[in-house]
Image 1 (tube, helix red, strand yellow):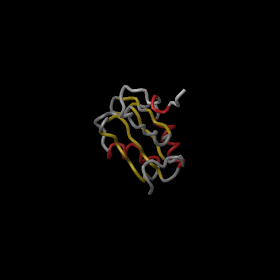
Image 2: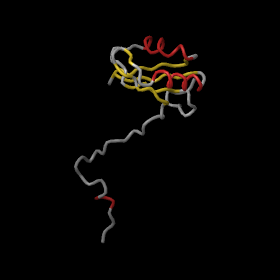
Image 3: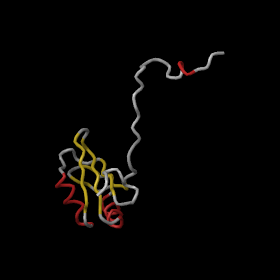
Image 4: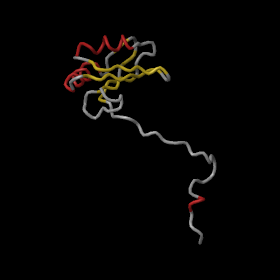
Length: 107
């Protein structure tokens, strides 16, 4: 099993608008009927989303088709194929300064 970020193979599903009380066991129980799960990760800070990785991409597609928009513990789930990692942006340490001002060539 690779890192939780290699999702380009179509096996990893994003679950949004998840009830903050939902546990890993809850998510695994909900999704296991679609096929073999290799990983479940539930966000805690901030809560409200999770990722499920299936052994087979067809199982991921079935889960999306069945569960997207359905009510689970009082919330309408958003279930879609994971898009992979978001790029992490470093904060500019200069705060307030023009980050390009020191790079300008003299005239």
